[in-house]
Length: 290
Image 1 (cartoon, rainbow, N blue to C red):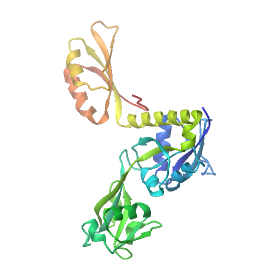
Image 2: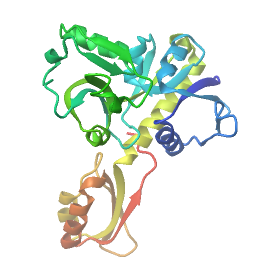
Image 3: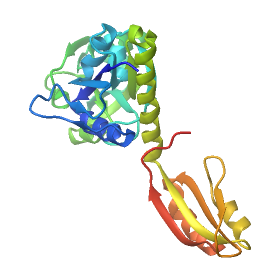
Image 4: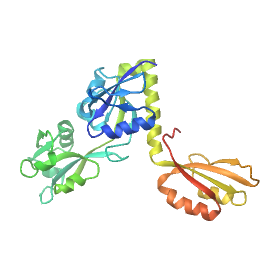
């Protein structure tokens, strides 16, 4: 494998990215020179850069690979190789959206009503493409931040990134339409991707990041079940493929374990207990690699 230069997103996505990297097996730390974080892997040299810029630096070869949003790849029109779609964001494991938002009392109800209006956004390219797709002419201006507070005094509408919509609601704005849905992507420079050594390292990183994200919503359930209740317990217990079953030294008893979705555990454990399972243990996971 060859050393890779990896762009990590500075700003709102930074904390979530560092956490996912750690679960994937890569500890990232920043010192006084925050632009150059350290990674406990001699084959990864990291750079901490705003997500808005990473795809451009990857495209032009200053970075071999990077983690950034699909939205910024689209905004920059970057020609990069998308290695992995990683569904995580600042506040949770879900996509984010760029939306058209207007004051609650605005007469704007649809995209057509934006004709002739002034719109503020950080994603000017995305906004202009969206309006063109709908055949709408409007004035789009770049926003340096605090976009939510600009309507209605400074602009008629905004196109803003949202994950939960709470900030928009707090500023008395309502969503008119979704412009673009976005997730985090691991991207690679096309020349770096053709380099066998660098590609191997990038693919290793992709596999471990996917595994860390898969583990976010799953847990390992372990229990002991008597052979008389084994069939009933197995009917209740979901698994990635099939539960693992091992004989115990105690005659007639089996150890059963399975990786399951965490959201169903609260229903499964009582049902397993009623079916005769004993010593049920729930264990958090770092990675699940199918």
